[in-house]
Amino acid sequence: MAEGPTKVVMSTDLPGAISRRQGKVRDIYEYADGLLLVASDRVSAFDVVMPTGIPDKGKVLTQVSAFWFDRTKDIVPNHLISIDVADFPEAVQPFAEILAGRAMWCRRAEVVPVECVVRGYLAGAAWRAYQDGEAYCGHEFPEGLREAEKLDEPIFTPTTKAESGHDIPLTREQCIELCGERHAMQMESTAIELYTFAAEHAEANGLLPADTKFEFGLVDDELLLIDELFTPDSSRYWDAAQWAPGRRPVGFDKQYLRDWLDTLDWDKTPPGPELPGHVVSRTRELYVELMRRLTGREP
Ligand SMILES: Nc1ncnc2c1ncn2[C@@H]1O[C@H](COP(=O)(O)OP(=O)(O)OP(=O)(O)O)[C@@H](O)[C@H]1O
Ligand SMILES: [Mg+2]
Image (cartoon, rainbow, N blue to C red):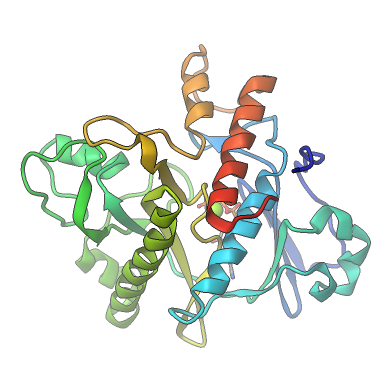
């Protein structure tokens, strides 16, 4: 039997780093010989970090990423060195209990300023553009598609990496302008190959990866896959059993949380509201169920 949820980790305070910063979800520590990415249990929705965490969420993100980094390392090299605390810097060893299963020791890279999105199904921003009769990232779609329809081929739909505000979709030409032709073309073909590989595995486990986001970095001018990989935060996973084109499928992500937030009189600016127990436990269940289906393991 699975054990119950562990104590929620909202933020960490580790010693000995050269620099540190906090993303929405991760605490990022730079040490002389690498980067320690600690996935907290923070959850964001509508770009606002909630004051309440989701127990084990950070462990799911780290362990799902590690699962995929290991399986895709022959497609493209990645930043992961180890998730074993024993391999982390000496200074953080006293924090082994907090870090176990939720932190990645990585190679630091120069982050490429593009979010590499691949879509196998018509959803989200691409669906909204389609409804308005517009191309998306330069892709024209055939007539008569319904929401959540499977596309003939997965498509590459990169966006800018906005520090604040919304990410802007990019055409291939714009992506080349930002990253140079060699890196842009390599990111596109690698992203499609990664998606195709993961989709096959996920589908065999009753999951449809509608779309997913990759980040790449550069080390010595060569591309390295960085950040997180095929997690429920970076990917829109649907339950295959409940999927049908023409209606919005059930997602293994923050949809339950977003739907609950939509019932509130909250203007989607910080601070977010405290989350009630049922929203926390349902969201946790979705994250854990996704990890179980993908990896056969629990956090
Ligand atoms: N190997 C790496 N080298 C350098 N930076 C990295 C590496 N891997 C991940 N990062 C960066 O670390 C950060 C991860 O933190 P986190 O995901 O919490 O950020 P975020 O606020 O969620 O940003 P976003 O919402 O755009 O993902 C990202 O800014 C990512 O680009
Ligand atoms: Mg991120």
